Image 1 (cartoon, one colour):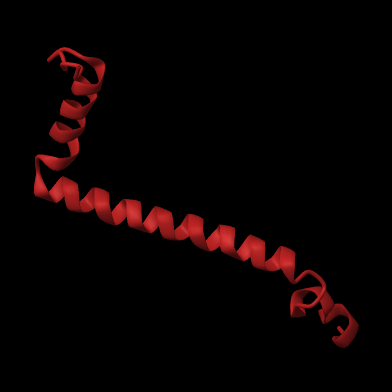
Image 2 (tube, helix red, strand yellow):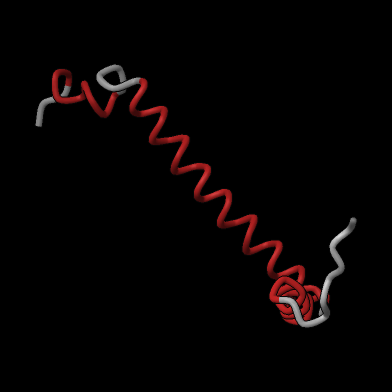
Length: 71
């Protein structure tokens, strides 16, 4: 038997609040998309750089430059 949704449920209130604050106006919706994409790109770049540096520790120029440069 399907569960009937009550108009005053917490999930429905959050859905309405999200719709009214983000999706209702196109300018706010597009701004949210661009800001979210920018934040996701920054997180992805920092995580992938950290993984790359960890896998290649000791083989990158920043790790071995002291052996080859004189100041």
